[in-house]
Image 1 (cartoon, rainbow, N blue to C red):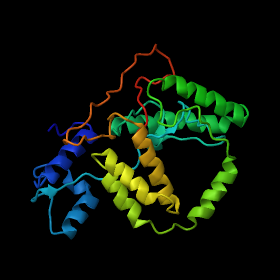
Image 2: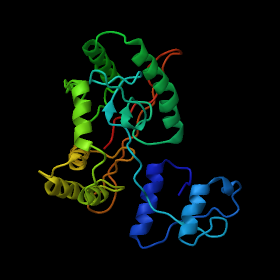
Image 3: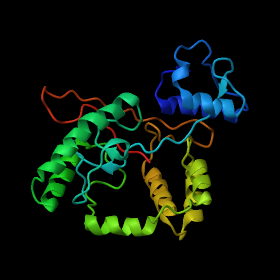
Length: 265
Protein backbone atom coordinates (compact mmCIF):
# COMPACT_ATOMS: atom_id res chain seq x y z
CA UNK A 1 0.00 0.00 0.00
CA UNK A 2 1.25 3.48 -0.88
CA UNK A 3 1.58 5.35 2.41
CA UNK A 4 0.90 8.68 0.67
CA UNK A 5 -2.17 7.45 -1.23
CA UNK A 6 -5.49 9.33 -0.82
CA UNK A 7 -6.95 8.70 2.59
CA UNK A 8 -9.93 6.74 1.27
CA UNK A 9 -7.48 4.25 -0.28
CA UNK A 10 -5.43 4.04 2.92
CA UNK A 11 -8.54 3.69 5.10
CA UNK A 12 -9.92 0.91 2.89
CA UNK A 13 -6.61 -0.97 3.02
CA UNK A 14 -6.34 -0.65 6.81
CA UNK A 15 -9.99 -1.69 7.19
CA UNK A 16 -9.45 -4.81 5.06
CA UNK A 17 -6.38 -5.84 7.07
CA UNK A 18 -8.19 -5.45 10.38
CA UNK A 19 -11.18 -7.45 9.11
CA UNK A 20 -8.73 -10.22 8.24
CA UNK A 21 -7.52 -10.20 11.86
CA UNK A 22 -4.21 -8.48 11.19
CA UNK A 23 -2.74 -5.65 13.24
CA UNK A 24 -1.92 -2.40 11.44
CA UNK A 25 0.71 -0.11 12.95
CA UNK A 26 2.26 3.28 12.29
CA UNK A 27 6.02 3.17 12.71
CA UNK A 28 7.36 6.59 13.76
CA UNK A 29 10.67 5.34 15.11
CA UNK A 30 13.53 7.42 13.77
CA UNK A 31 11.25 10.20 12.55
CA UNK A 32 12.59 13.66 13.33
CA UNK A 33 10.50 16.29 15.08
CA UNK A 34 8.27 13.92 17.06
CA UNK A 35 8.63 16.18 20.08
CA UNK A 36 6.44 18.73 18.30
CA UNK A 37 3.47 16.32 18.31
CA UNK A 38 2.67 16.71 21.98
CA UNK A 39 -0.94 15.53 21.70
CA UNK A 40 0.14 12.33 19.94
CA UNK A 41 2.82 11.69 22.54
CA UNK A 42 0.35 12.26 25.40
CA UNK A 43 -2.25 9.95 23.89
CA UNK A 44 0.33 7.22 23.33
CA UNK A 45 1.77 7.65 26.82
CA UNK A 46 -1.71 7.20 28.33
CA UNK A 47 -1.73 3.62 27.04
CA UNK A 48 1.93 2.93 27.75
CA UNK A 49 3.37 3.62 24.29
CA UNK A 50 6.20 5.86 23.15
CA UNK A 51 6.19 6.72 19.41
CA UNK A 52 9.99 7.05 19.53
CA UNK A 53 10.22 3.42 20.62
CA UNK A 54 6.94 1.62 19.85
CA UNK A 55 4.91 1.16 16.65
CA UNK A 56 1.45 2.67 17.13
CA UNK A 57 -1.70 0.63 16.34
CA UNK A 58 -4.03 2.46 13.94
CA UNK A 59 -7.53 2.07 12.53
CA UNK A 60 -9.74 4.10 10.16
CA UNK A 61 -11.60 6.97 11.79
CA UNK A 62 -14.41 9.30 10.79
CA UNK A 63 -13.21 12.58 9.31
CA UNK A 64 -15.85 15.29 9.55
CA UNK A 65 -17.54 15.73 6.17
CA UNK A 66 -16.51 15.62 2.53
CA UNK A 67 -18.75 18.01 0.68
CA UNK A 68 -22.51 17.91 0.48
CA UNK A 69 -23.77 21.51 0.56
CA UNK A 70 -23.81 22.70 -3.05
CA UNK A 71 -22.21 26.13 -3.35
CA UNK A 72 -20.34 28.23 -5.87
CA UNK A 73 -16.81 29.66 -5.79
CA UNK A 74 -17.97 32.42 -3.43
CA UNK A 75 -19.51 29.93 -1.01
CA UNK A 76 -23.09 30.98 -1.81
CA UNK A 77 -25.77 28.33 -1.37
CA UNK A 78 -29.44 28.09 -2.29
CA UNK A 79 -30.41 29.35 1.18
CA UNK A 80 -30.49 33.17 1.33
CA UNK A 81 -27.90 34.42 3.79
CA UNK A 82 -26.10 31.07 4.09
CA UNK A 83 -22.55 30.53 2.84
CA UNK A 84 -20.76 27.16 2.96
CA UNK A 85 -16.97 26.91 2.86
CA UNK A 86 -14.52 24.12 3.55
CA UNK A 87 -15.15 20.42 4.03
CA UNK A 88 -18.91 20.87 4.36
CA UNK A 89 -19.17 22.56 0.95
CA UNK A 90 -19.39 20.97 -2.48
CA UNK A 91 -17.78 23.62 -4.67
CA UNK A 92 -16.07 21.24 -7.09
CA UNK A 93 -12.60 22.06 -5.75
CA UNK A 94 -11.95 19.23 -3.33
CA UNK A 95 -13.87 16.54 -5.18
CA UNK A 96 -15.05 13.43 -3.40
CA UNK A 97 -12.09 13.04 -1.08
CA UNK A 98 -10.48 14.96 1.72
CA UNK A 99 -6.87 15.96 1.01
CA UNK A 100 -4.81 18.50 2.93
CA UNK A 101 -3.89 20.50 -0.16
CA UNK A 102 -7.50 20.82 -1.27
CA UNK A 103 -8.76 21.81 2.17
CA UNK A 104 -6.15 24.57 2.21
CA UNK A 105 -7.52 25.78 -1.10
CA UNK A 106 -11.03 25.78 0.35
CA UNK A 107 -9.94 27.45 3.57
CA UNK A 108 -7.84 30.21 1.99
CA UNK A 109 -9.19 30.91 -1.48
CA UNK A 110 -12.90 30.17 -1.13
CA UNK A 111 -13.10 31.60 2.39
CA UNK A 112 -11.59 34.87 1.19
CA UNK A 113 -14.08 35.05 -1.67
CA UNK A 114 -16.98 34.20 0.64
CA UNK A 115 -15.94 36.83 3.18
CA UNK A 116 -15.75 39.47 0.45
CA UNK A 117 -19.17 38.43 -0.82
CA UNK A 118 -20.70 38.65 2.65
CA UNK A 119 -19.23 42.10 3.25
CA UNK A 120 -20.25 43.43 -0.15
CA UNK A 121 -23.91 42.55 0.31
CA UNK A 122 -24.31 42.34 -3.46
CA UNK A 123 -27.83 41.90 -4.83
CA UNK A 124 -30.98 40.78 -3.11
CA UNK A 125 -30.70 37.47 -1.20
CA UNK A 126 -33.15 35.63 -3.45
CA UNK A 127 -31.41 36.89 -6.58
CA UNK A 128 -27.97 35.93 -5.28
CA UNK A 129 -29.19 32.48 -4.31
CA UNK A 130 -30.71 31.88 -7.74
CA UNK A 131 -27.53 32.97 -9.51
CA UNK A 132 -25.47 30.86 -7.13
CA UNK A 133 -27.27 27.58 -7.70
CA UNK A 134 -27.44 28.11 -11.47
CA UNK A 135 -23.69 28.67 -11.64
CA UNK A 136 -22.86 25.85 -9.25
CA UNK A 137 -25.14 23.50 -11.16
CA UNK A 138 -23.28 24.28 -14.37
CA UNK A 139 -19.93 23.52 -12.77
CA UNK A 140 -21.24 20.29 -11.30
CA UNK A 141 -22.84 19.06 -14.51
CA UNK A 142 -22.41 15.31 -14.48
CA UNK A 143 -21.28 15.32 -10.85
CA UNK A 144 -24.31 16.81 -9.08
CA UNK A 145 -25.12 16.16 -5.47
CA UNK A 146 -27.59 13.28 -5.02
CA UNK A 147 -30.59 15.52 -4.35
CA UNK A 148 -29.96 17.75 -7.35
CA UNK A 149 -29.40 21.51 -7.42
CA UNK A 150 -32.91 22.19 -8.68
CA UNK A 151 -34.42 21.42 -5.27
CA UNK A 152 -33.83 24.82 -3.75
CA UNK A 153 -34.51 25.57 -0.09
CA UNK A 154 -36.74 28.57 0.56
CA UNK A 155 -36.74 28.67 4.36
CA UNK A 156 -35.89 32.01 5.92
CA UNK A 157 -32.27 31.81 7.06
CA UNK A 158 -32.73 33.74 10.32
CA UNK A 159 -35.72 31.65 11.38
CA UNK A 160 -33.87 28.46 10.49
CA UNK A 161 -30.90 29.55 12.60
CA UNK A 162 -33.15 30.23 15.61
CA UNK A 163 -34.90 26.89 15.18
CA UNK A 164 -31.54 25.13 15.11
CA UNK A 165 -30.43 26.95 18.25
CA UNK A 166 -33.64 25.98 20.05
CA UNK A 167 -33.23 22.38 18.94
CA UNK A 168 -29.60 22.03 19.96
CA UNK A 169 -29.71 24.15 23.12
CA UNK A 170 -26.50 23.82 25.10
CA UNK A 171 -25.56 20.64 23.29
CA UNK A 172 -27.75 17.55 23.63
CA UNK A 173 -26.36 14.17 24.48
CA UNK A 174 -25.51 12.28 21.31
CA UNK A 175 -27.69 9.33 20.36
CA UNK A 176 -25.42 6.25 20.72
CA UNK A 177 -27.56 4.16 18.36
CA UNK A 178 -27.01 6.66 15.54
CA UNK A 179 -23.25 6.41 15.87
CA UNK A 180 -23.32 2.62 15.88
CA UNK A 181 -25.58 2.45 12.82
CA UNK A 182 -23.51 4.95 10.83
CA UNK A 183 -20.26 3.19 11.69
CA UNK A 184 -21.72 -0.05 10.36
CA UNK A 185 -23.74 1.16 7.38
CA UNK A 186 -21.91 4.33 6.29
CA UNK A 187 -18.34 3.53 7.22
CA UNK A 188 -15.27 2.70 5.17
CA UNK A 189 -16.96 -0.07 3.16
CA UNK A 190 -20.68 0.21 2.52
CA UNK A 191 -23.26 -2.44 1.64
CA UNK A 192 -26.72 -1.57 0.40
CA UNK A 193 -28.49 -4.09 2.63
CA UNK A 194 -26.84 -2.58 5.71
CA UNK A 195 -27.82 0.93 4.63
CA UNK A 196 -31.45 -0.18 4.24
CA UNK A 197 -31.42 -1.86 7.67
CA UNK A 198 -29.99 1.27 9.28
CA UNK A 199 -32.69 3.43 7.67
CA UNK A 200 -35.37 1.09 9.00
CA UNK A 201 -33.91 1.30 12.51
CA UNK A 202 -33.79 5.12 12.33
CA UNK A 203 -37.29 5.57 10.93
CA UNK A 204 -39.26 7.91 13.20
CA UNK A 205 -36.37 8.32 15.65
CA UNK A 206 -36.35 11.91 17.00
CA UNK A 207 -33.41 14.28 17.31
CA UNK A 208 -30.96 16.06 15.00
CA UNK A 209 -28.49 13.15 15.01
CA UNK A 210 -31.07 10.75 13.61
CA UNK A 211 -32.23 13.31 11.05
CA UNK A 212 -28.71 13.88 9.71
CA UNK A 213 -28.04 10.14 9.71
CA UNK A 214 -31.13 9.47 7.60
CA UNK A 215 -30.07 12.14 5.10
CA UNK A 216 -26.56 10.67 4.86
CA UNK A 217 -27.89 7.15 4.31
CA UNK A 218 -30.48 8.20 1.73
CA UNK A 219 -27.87 10.21 -0.15
CA UNK A 220 -25.56 7.19 -0.10
CA UNK A 221 -28.22 5.05 -1.77
CA UNK A 222 -28.67 7.66 -4.50
CA UNK A 223 -24.94 7.57 -5.24
CA UNK A 224 -24.91 4.20 -6.99
CA UNK A 225 -21.21 4.01 -7.84
CA UNK A 226 -18.17 4.31 -5.62
CA UNK A 227 -16.45 7.68 -5.62
CA UNK A 228 -13.78 8.92 -3.22
CA UNK A 229 -14.68 8.17 0.38
CA UNK A 230 -18.03 6.67 -0.69
CA UNK A 231 -17.12 3.04 -1.36
CA UNK A 232 -19.72 0.39 -2.15
CA UNK A 233 -18.76 -3.24 -1.54
CA UNK A 234 -20.65 -6.00 -3.34
CA UNK A 235 -21.67 -9.27 -1.72
CA UNK A 236 -18.47 -11.02 -2.83
CA UNK A 237 -16.46 -8.40 -0.97
CA UNK A 238 -15.14 -6.57 -4.02
CA UNK A 239 -15.67 -2.82 -4.39
CA UNK A 240 -17.87 -1.58 -7.20
CA UNK A 241 -16.26 0.25 -10.11
CA UNK A 242 -14.97 3.53 -8.79
CA UNK A 243 -15.75 6.82 -10.48
CA UNK A 244 -12.64 8.90 -10.97
CA UNK A 245 -13.33 12.65 -11.22
CA UNK A 246 -12.30 14.31 -14.46
CA UNK A 247 -9.92 17.25 -14.41
CA UNK A 248 -10.78 20.16 -16.64
CA UNK A 249 -8.33 22.76 -17.85
CA UNK A 250 -9.65 26.31 -17.64
CA UNK A 251 -8.32 29.44 -19.33
CA UNK A 252 -6.03 31.64 -17.30
CA UNK A 253 -8.05 33.89 -15.03
CA UNK A 254 -11.14 31.68 -15.11
CA UNK A 255 -13.06 31.50 -11.84
CA UNK A 256 -14.36 28.02 -12.59
CA UNK A 257 -12.95 25.04 -10.67
CA UNK A 258 -10.23 22.90 -12.23
CA UNK A 259 -11.47 19.71 -10.61
CA UNK A 260 -15.06 18.56 -10.77
CA UNK A 261 -16.63 15.90 -8.62
CA UNK A 262 -19.89 15.22 -6.85
CA UNK A 263 -20.58 15.38 -3.15
CA UNK A 264 -20.55 12.11 -1.31
CA UNK A 265 -22.36 11.01 1.78
